[in-house]
Amino acid sequence: MKKMILSSLLLGLMAFVLMQGFQVRELGAGSGESIAQERCTACHGIGRVERAGHDRARWNSTVRRMMGKSNFGPKLSDAEFEALIEYLVSI
Image 1 (cartoon, rainbow, N blue to C red):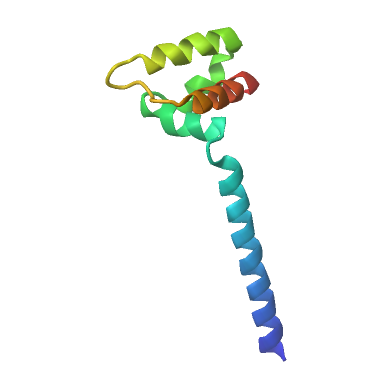
Image 2: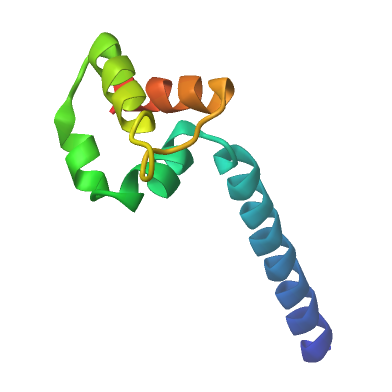
């Protein structure tokens, strides 16, 4: 009886953990935050980005300037660019 209860609890816990992982991955995929973590930190720390405090216009020009750096700039689709700007303005 104890084994059955333990097995059920373990199975339930595993299902819960897996569902949480899928939910996080689904929400985070392509989000502005994940784009910032993946692309912006290739050249500088995320703390620098978080401390900048730019408004929308300044972030637009800053991100476009960074994208224009031939060898190092991030390559972003229009959707990624918009998601990144939304995130940057919100922090």
